[in-house]
Length: 119
Image 1 (cartoon, helix red, strand yellow):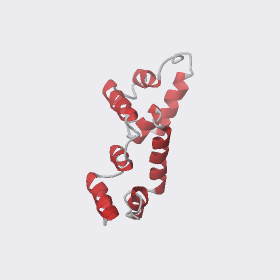
Image 2 (cartoon, helix red, strand yellow):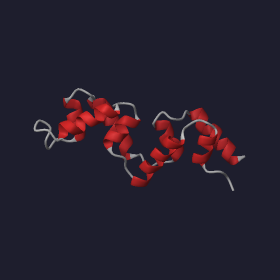
Image 3 (cartoon, helix red, strand yellow):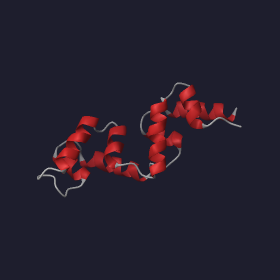
Protein backbone atom coordinates (compact mmCIF):
# COMPACT_ATOMS: atom_id res chain seq x y z
CA UNK A 1 0.00 0.00 0.00
CA UNK A 2 1.34 3.43 -0.94
CA UNK A 3 2.27 5.76 1.89
CA UNK A 4 -0.03 8.70 2.53
CA UNK A 5 0.98 12.04 1.01
CA UNK A 6 1.00 13.78 4.40
CA UNK A 7 3.27 11.15 5.94
CA UNK A 8 5.71 11.31 3.04
CA UNK A 9 5.90 15.08 2.87
CA UNK A 10 6.85 15.18 6.57
CA UNK A 11 9.25 12.21 6.24
CA UNK A 12 10.98 13.96 3.33
CA UNK A 13 11.43 17.07 5.52
CA UNK A 14 9.39 19.44 3.36
CA UNK A 15 6.85 20.39 6.04
CA UNK A 16 6.30 19.84 9.74
CA UNK A 17 3.72 17.66 11.45
CA UNK A 18 2.14 20.86 12.79
CA UNK A 19 1.71 22.27 9.27
CA UNK A 20 0.13 19.01 8.09
CA UNK A 21 -2.25 18.97 11.06
CA UNK A 22 -3.23 22.59 10.37
CA UNK A 23 -4.05 21.85 6.74
CA UNK A 24 -5.93 18.65 7.58
CA UNK A 25 -8.06 20.64 10.05
CA UNK A 26 -8.78 23.14 7.28
CA UNK A 27 -9.89 20.27 5.05
CA UNK A 28 -12.10 18.77 7.77
CA UNK A 29 -13.85 22.05 8.47
CA UNK A 30 -14.59 22.39 4.80
CA UNK A 31 -13.75 26.04 4.91
CA UNK A 32 -11.12 27.76 6.97
CA UNK A 33 -11.86 30.94 8.86
CA UNK A 34 -10.81 34.01 6.91
CA UNK A 35 -8.48 35.26 9.64
CA UNK A 36 -6.64 31.96 9.76
CA UNK A 37 -6.38 31.90 5.96
CA UNK A 38 -4.83 35.38 6.05
CA UNK A 39 -2.28 34.25 8.65
CA UNK A 40 -1.53 31.04 6.72
CA UNK A 41 -0.98 33.03 3.54
CA UNK A 42 1.35 35.35 5.50
CA UNK A 43 -0.86 38.35 4.75
CA UNK A 44 -1.40 39.03 8.47
CA UNK A 45 0.49 38.15 11.61
CA UNK A 46 -1.23 36.42 14.52
CA UNK A 47 -0.94 39.66 16.46
CA UNK A 48 -2.67 41.60 13.67
CA UNK A 49 -5.39 38.94 13.61
CA UNK A 50 -5.94 39.46 17.32
CA UNK A 51 -6.00 43.25 16.85
CA UNK A 52 -8.69 42.97 14.19
CA UNK A 53 -10.84 40.69 16.36
CA UNK A 54 -10.46 43.17 19.24
CA UNK A 55 -11.46 46.01 16.91
CA UNK A 56 -14.49 44.02 15.74
CA UNK A 57 -15.88 43.92 19.26
CA UNK A 58 -15.13 47.58 19.95
CA UNK A 59 -17.77 50.29 19.39
CA UNK A 60 -15.99 51.40 16.18
CA UNK A 61 -15.93 47.90 14.68
CA UNK A 62 -19.21 46.54 16.01
CA UNK A 63 -21.28 44.83 13.34
CA UNK A 64 -18.54 44.97 10.70
CA UNK A 65 -17.12 41.97 8.88
CA UNK A 66 -13.57 40.81 9.57
CA UNK A 67 -12.25 41.87 6.16
CA UNK A 68 -13.90 45.26 6.39
CA UNK A 69 -12.22 45.86 9.75
CA UNK A 70 -8.83 44.72 8.42
CA UNK A 71 -9.07 47.20 5.55
CA UNK A 72 -10.27 50.00 7.83
CA UNK A 73 -7.27 49.36 10.07
CA UNK A 74 -5.01 49.47 6.98
CA UNK A 75 -3.73 45.97 7.69
CA UNK A 76 -5.01 44.60 4.39
CA UNK A 77 -5.78 45.82 0.89
CA UNK A 78 -8.93 44.99 -1.06
CA UNK A 79 -6.77 42.92 -3.41
CA UNK A 80 -5.25 40.82 -0.61
CA UNK A 81 -8.68 40.35 0.97
CA UNK A 82 -10.07 39.10 -2.34
CA UNK A 83 -7.11 36.72 -2.71
CA UNK A 84 -7.75 35.27 0.75
CA UNK A 85 -11.50 34.94 0.21
CA UNK A 86 -10.92 33.12 -3.07
CA UNK A 87 -8.49 30.78 -1.33
CA UNK A 88 -10.92 30.30 1.54
CA UNK A 89 -13.59 29.12 -0.88
CA UNK A 90 -11.34 26.43 -2.29
CA UNK A 91 -9.44 25.36 0.84
CA UNK A 92 -11.00 21.90 0.81
CA UNK A 93 -8.78 20.70 -2.04
CA UNK A 94 -6.02 18.14 -2.19
CA UNK A 95 -3.46 18.23 0.60
CA UNK A 96 -0.54 18.90 -1.76
CA UNK A 97 -2.36 21.79 -3.44
CA UNK A 98 -3.23 23.42 -0.14
CA UNK A 99 0.35 23.05 1.10
CA UNK A 100 1.57 24.77 -2.07
CA UNK A 101 -1.05 27.53 -1.77
CA UNK A 102 0.12 28.23 1.77
CA UNK A 103 3.73 28.41 0.62
CA UNK A 104 4.72 25.37 2.70
CA UNK A 105 5.60 23.27 -0.34
CA UNK A 106 6.98 23.99 -3.80
CA UNK A 107 5.72 22.39 -6.99
CA UNK A 108 8.98 20.46 -7.26
CA UNK A 109 8.64 19.16 -3.72
CA UNK A 110 5.04 18.10 -4.30
CA UNK A 111 6.05 16.26 -7.45
CA UNK A 112 8.93 14.53 -5.62
CA UNK A 113 6.51 13.30 -2.96
CA UNK A 114 4.10 12.02 -5.61
CA UNK A 115 6.92 10.21 -7.43
CA UNK A 116 7.97 8.57 -4.18
CA UNK A 117 4.37 7.71 -3.38
CA UNK A 118 4.01 5.96 -6.74
CA UNK A 119 7.33 4.10 -6.51
